[in-house]
Length: 68
Image 1 (cartoon, rainbow, N blue to C red):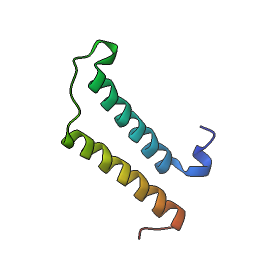
Image 2 (image 1 turned 60 degrees about the horizontal axis):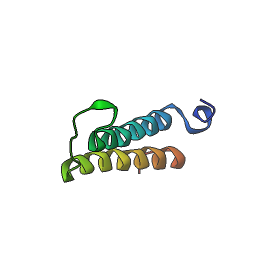
Image 3 (image 1 turned 135 degrees about the vertical axis):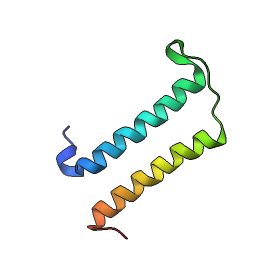
Image 4 (image 1 turned 180 degrees about the vertical axis):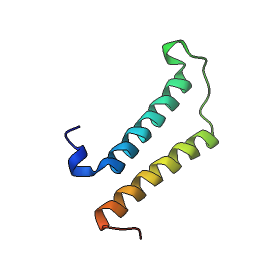
């Protein structure tokens, strides 16, 4: 919560969601915490990659003061 005032609420939430998606992908891939293994495939990687692209777009438009 120390970075939220500096980053802004939107950027903070986007980072949290991106981190959760990456973590859940790894948990599924390795079958951690007793879950059934779900292999990483191109579609799942693409989905997480789009979230990270969205994260960068939110951060870029926030630091520039508006949408490109």
